[in-house]
Amino acid sequence: MILKELGGYSNLFTEYTELRIQENRSVGIAVVNGDVMSNFRTSSSGVSARTYSNGVWGFASDPEIKDKNIRKVIAFATRNAKFLSSRENRGGKQLPVTLGNGARDFSTKNPRNSQKDLIDFVRKIDSRILQEFKEISSRTVALQLLDMEKSLLTSHGSSAYSMTPRSIM
Image 1 (cartoon, rainbow, N blue to C red):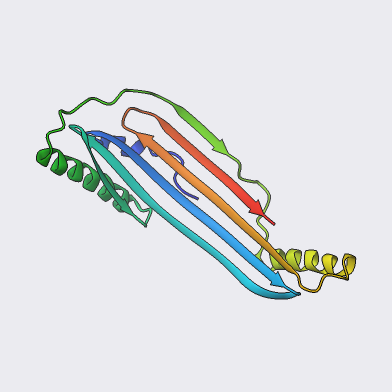
Image 2: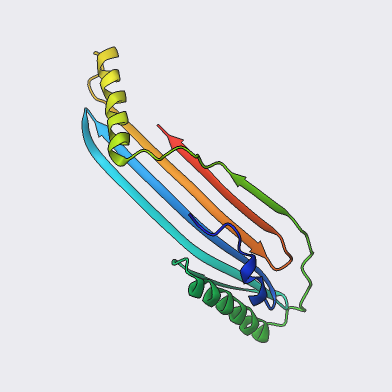
C-alpha cells in the first residue's frame, strides 16, 4: 500500500510541481497440460515529480518510496527545472490553474488468496477443461492479476488516489 495522502509534502513545492507515487503488484500463473509452467508475484514502485519553471519542465524519479527519497525527488525536479530555465529563454508562460480532487479505490476488503490457492484454482479450471472437452490435445490456462495504485498531488492543491485491480483469465 502506498501513501494515499501526500499533502505533507506540499510545503516543499517552490514552483508548480506534480508529485506522483505509484505501485504495481502483479501475479501470474500458467498451467500447460496440468503442469505449472509459470508462477510469479512481483511488485514495482516509485516516486516521481515534475516541476515547471519559466516555461520548462524538470523531472526526477526514484524507485524507492521513502520519505527521504520523496523529498530528494522534489528537490531534484525543482533544481532540474531551474537549471533548464536558466539555459532556455521560454518566456515563462503561466500554467492554467485547475483544481480537482478524486479517489477511486476498487480494492477488496476480503483476504487475499495465497499463491497456492491461486495455483489450485488454475489447476481446477484446467482439470474441468480436460473433463469436459476430451478432444482437446493441448491446454494452457493462465491467470494474470495486476493491482495499480497511484497517488498524485499538485502544487495548485489538486489530488488524486486510485487503486485499480485487473484480472485476466
